Length: 442
Image (cartoon, rainbow, N blue to C red):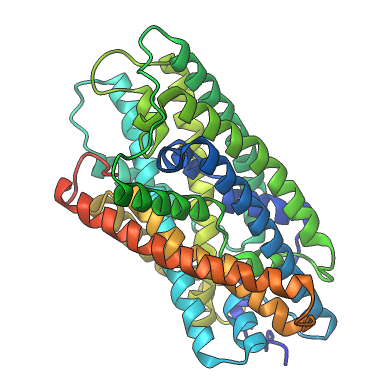
């Protein structure tokens, strides 16, 4: 049975279906290609060159395949007269289980809040970096920059629909290409300079530490490719959606290929096993001069800062949709006072809470790994394959059936081990931080 959209303000307003395929491509790219690519050299640090390349490529192939299968399932449902606009409704109806509905809500909520906190935290750090170069002895602290970012996020949160982000997300796509090229140039410059750190690509000496580092790195790569909102993005397409999402995926993965590999190779080549959880910090060592021209680092930080505003809004759409499903009246206009006032209040409160958590708990790298293991792996590597097998019922002797089963089994195990490794690292790092610290841990 199709969703009752006539009385559903969340679907009618936030997820209005008016987009073209390239708009979906912009949304997907913003959801996947973000400053998290700055953690790729750190991930390679836990895997080395060979396993690093293998993991990055395997995750790319599997996620593209996974998203393709999910788009096929959504298209199949639409042709049958059931257009699903939300991941939770799709999964619950395809798999015929009420607990799946709440499981997806829980995981999506965790992802959305985690990314919202992470984007605000990282944006605040970018502002702090710019400020420290302009005023090295300035008195402003990290939590004050986070407050500034939160105010901007509150303003942008008033863009009423997912579709209204299309121009912002196109700009975000261009910004991702811009700062990636700046980062690559800066890392090559740093690696060739006379002040370059010694290049050491060795892994952890202890077997147990090496295993934990490897699974943490895999979790980070999974979170970088993660996109737990594909059904919501496909919902923004003007019907019929058939074939449009695949074109959007192709656009997105073209950008992924350019950005992910260039950032990983250049950063790990330059800094090896000294790679920071955010490689930009390697270019600005605590002691000695910057390892790249400060204007390059500053411009990259500005591009990253601007893109973070778009990323924060993309991942907040699910939260906004849930809010407006309960608070808005679909019978009244999108900008009527009845709907405008609750929207301003609820979205501002949501962003204020995320900003407060970002200031209080500066754990960017560790949060990224945990979100990848616990959040993205179930939504991106397990449920799509399960829904495809349930919907299309391929023969148990067919290749696609066993490929899907293999991916589910492998990534269930990977997710469990990755979650344990990421939580272990979070516990180890917990002794290094203070509430409202001026430094990001991880």
